[in-house]
Amino acid sequence: MQEPEHAREFFPKPNPWNAADVAETLRERGWLGGAASREHEEWCERAALLLGPQAADRAALEGLLRLVFHYDAAELIGQVESHAVLSRNAARDVLRETALLLLDGGKLDSERFKEIVAALKERLELRSRDLFHPIRLALAGKVGEGQLDRVILLIDGAAALQWEVPVKNARTRMVEFCSALD
Image (cartoon, rainbow, N blue to C red):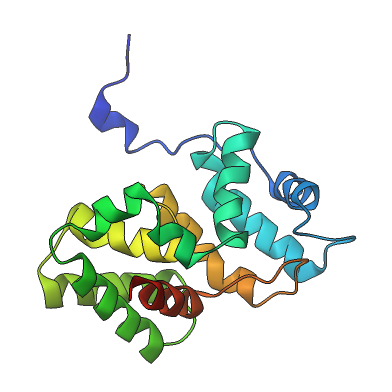
């Protein structure tokens, strides 16, 4: 017997990944050098917690982690999927308001992200994909659904650490994205 759709929301997805899996993936991609510091281990643990349930296999986990470690706004703007998002109702208003809120506040963590979304909902009276898709595109670097919000929550924490490649924080990503639009 199949579980009813409404029952699934009460049971979290299983998480097949842990911090060691995340660290191994980062090493394989050249994003994490030798031994991980305590801070790197803590970040990997958080990444496993947030991204693990969203990744059915190692390739999916690597794809989500890549969004943290690789960001090229000009490349994003050139993609067909990006144009579809940017042509939607009020997409540029969402980006402008998000940029102002990011530049005005501190580190982008879960609470700050909730505050930004609440402010955007109030200011722009938008919901769903009209609100979230431009944010996800500009910050996570991909068109998609809620799993990208988890990527967004990892960005500033990763940017604060020393990696083999520099990680751009949310503010930098937003500024680069808005600049690439012009």
